[in-house]
Length: 241
Image 1 (spheres, one colour):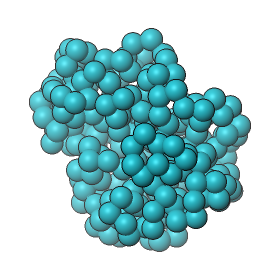
Image 2 (cartoon, helix red, strand yellow):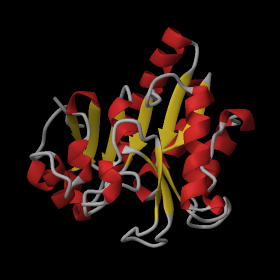
Image 3 (cartoon, rainbow, N blue to C red):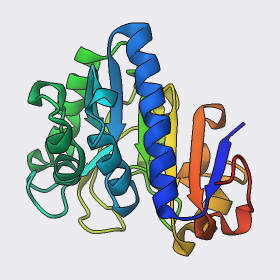
Image 4 (cartoon, one colour):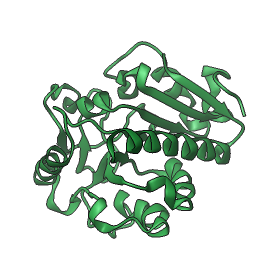
């Protein structure tokens, strides 16, 4: 069963998300001596990263990975790495050796190959099992860079990281974790704020469909945090703020 919490506004979503992520990371670190977290880009998670960055102790023993990346240099304004660096990494002082960025500048295929290799070297499992993956959701229901009806959704259970050449959102070339890696994660935390996400959230909570990639996530390992505007058709559920 999906754990669904609606909050009054986007700031409360960010606060709840930061607390939930910190809890999962602490549990992972206590159980295994390391915690592996993958982050997404986009406007919604940025405030959550700022709150996490303000509490460096929450990142003790955490290895930082990425759910997807645009094929741009790391300091490009479109770079997910740049967003995470500015909001979380610098503030928390995460050592560079614990940050594993996707090399977007290498292009979709080579960047995906390199990242799959790095993940498999550092994390056990086939595919590698991350402790927590932070996701946003697009108005079309996409997560990471897995888009509706895309061939990447059929990559299979052994796929780790994939190149994307035809993203419907610019830039068209990207790198993304596979659906198999998202399904293998111990927890996915999905954030949605604003009325523009309401239809996507409602579709995600409906029947699983390749036309709504977010609906394919493992619901028993999924925590969804929404503001009232994004909750829309889903109604108020979970633990209201």
